[in-house]
Image (cartoon, rainbow, N blue to C red; front, side, top):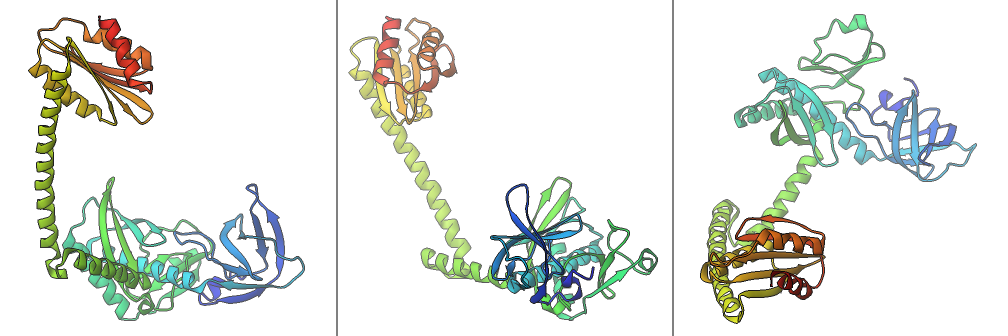
Length: 393
């Protein structure tokens, strides 16, 4: 482990090393292996470090077969000493989040016996999956209070390498997946956990912890939270959003809920009024189409009318003109849709006419004895209606 400098000092920002080898992997990406490194590779739920090697950007770090590969944007000059620089803001963020996860997981287990099954450190938030099928708000509040109390009390965070015999001295929170090179991360009298990640020296450096929410995931509960600087970032984002909403709603923050409820009620009332007006317009339109038809077959071609509107229009017309046949089509984007309907006093086989229509446009459809609908490839609506009219006649 001597060449893994991040285990010797998680606060190391710069280091020097020799270039051991430089290769290109199967995907064509360049990577370098160094005699030693402070770059943490992806592992244990913690993302990789980024930074620079001799000014060349490091975009990914992975451990493959015991080798730490630094994926770089361009080749390093062979035979030169390598000077590495860690993106410290990213590294310390990961240290805060990872330590915060240990604290939160230990708090859930201590208070309610909910074990952490898995952990994910994302770009903006973190999640843990708890081995329980339910979490109530009161439990989440109490666990968050305990976690922040532990942070505030400034407990040391100790890392220690042990063998299997020494391991028996500790009450671990979960079983280990390794039997050698065992590394413990310890918050004395609170949490003992096997972990290969990077952590700050004390709980106080985590800053604070905020649970954002949770949801059921199969038979577990997934808890979303943030720690450290991310808490301030979230607070800043929410504050800006509230400022904008306060201005838009013309209401102070404490009255914002009531203002939104009023808008939602108004929206529902407006939607109802619009639907009523649409129904009135359809009634007028249906009457106009019926009046325009001199023969028993009445046709109309539309642009960008939904199949639902065509169906509604057709039902209105056959209810008011029981001795007519209505052929409606609409050119909608890259397809043609149609609705055929006939009054109860008119004879004819709608399904048979629909089959002919669908064969013309290579389409699909369905319906019953009084109304059929379908759609297919776009052709001229006028030509389509003319062809069906000739078949009916």
